[in-house]
Amino acid sequence: MSEQVFTVDALKRILLEGAGADESVDLDGDVLDTSFEDLGYESLALLETGGRIEREYGISLPDDVFSEHPTPRALVAAINALLQDAVAA
Amino acid sequence: MSTRTVITGIGVATPNGLGVEDFWAATRIGKNAIDRVTHFDPTPYPSQLAGEIRHFNAQDHLPSRLIPQTDRMTRLALVAADCAFKDAGIVPGDIAEFDMGVVTASTSGGFEFGQNELKKLWSQGSQYVSAYQSFAWFYAVNSGQISIRNGMRGPSGVVVSDHAGGLDAIAQGRRQIRKGSKLIFSGGFDASICTWGWVAQIAGGRLSTSGDPDRAYLPFDADANGYVPGEGGALLVLEDEPTARERGARNIYGEIAGYGSTFDPKPGSGREPGLRRAIEVALADAGIEADQVDVVFADAAGTPRLDREEADAISAVFGPSGVPVTAPKTMTGRLYSGAAPVDVVSALLAIRDGVIPPTTNVELSPEYAIDLVTAQPRSAPLRTALVLARGYGGFNSAVVVRAAD
Image (cartoon, chains in turn blue, green):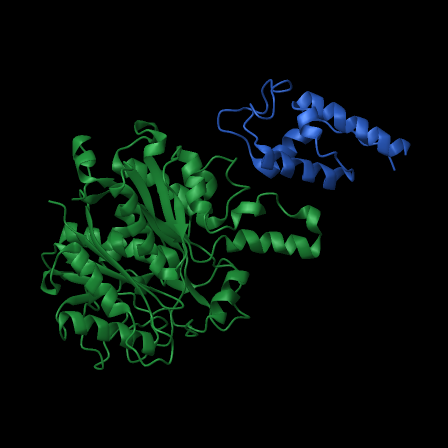
């Protein structure tokens, strides 16, 4: 399995595809450290986002991934760590 | 003594137009919107005609957050809700959130959304099914999404009784106004012109199989051979009259003056169907006699037995040809939970303009002793209208709407 990298741009694309974006939020702005909740994503939107990341990257996310990593920056780092673990395994 | 419940805003989306004025301009002149299905290829199916809403692009009206989580019927309902607020001259924040509620009817639920997710389930696996399938298909979802989008946290709910539900929801809205809510949105939307919805409707056994848009849905005609399905519906803004007048409501289309609902006796019992009683209950509730009704908007099922039952009920209450009867839904097909709220809208606008929209394409069968308005709109001073709706399985409902002045 070749090494995959999960980027912020990929996260934004998946968020938009799966859940859209709140009218008051510009995902292209400085949102890296804004919580998903403040970005307007409720639990179902995050469930959908997580499902799409799992499908696309062939990984399994822990149930608490969004509560443990509640911002785009934290989530991207956590998913890249999971991807590296998957390559190492 | 309850105060009167008045209609102060309308949001409507039907194959004959989006928004009150477009809808009414087409309806009052009898424009036929039935045509061959384009939402999917109907070639393999015995029924191929529908009343479709064309040129509706939800992305033009709704934020992207709502698109992945909504069925077509919900998108139509949300846009209609925006229109209804505008028409009522109210901004959602004007009224306290617990004083506003939403009561809608639903017949099918979000069939197209569900169809797409089921397809993914069987072809790709459960991990491909949208998390939003959990509610997007659900009967109550239109009430819920309208409530969330507009901050309406008062009494809300959904009624599921097929076509009759459109009137039952309005009656429930009136109850909530009488109990003290300041504003209730009420009505219904269905939009299941997709292959899964289509086979479900075919299974009901009442769909027309005619391929001629002008001859497919002919209630009260000797050639009646079933109905054509359509999509869409309407939302009404209900308020109590003093509140509406106090805020200087710019539209007071009329009042919900009476309501009755009954259930048919067991098939084969030989007892009379419940529609006549529903009419009588609604008239009594409105405190009027039959001769005070100026026009009847019929359920117009389009199958001989049901047309017979409705014509008999109308002649029993009003006398042979005793009141003008019309069924403008011949232009759009039957809209399920949306049909009766749309008829209520037509009734209110008919009263406003003194014109009865026609039952298009139909030539009245001599078997029925009703004064059916066919071919051309009919001008008449109108003050009181009766709207009828029946639901598959025995539901009968009737609503009396009356000019509010």
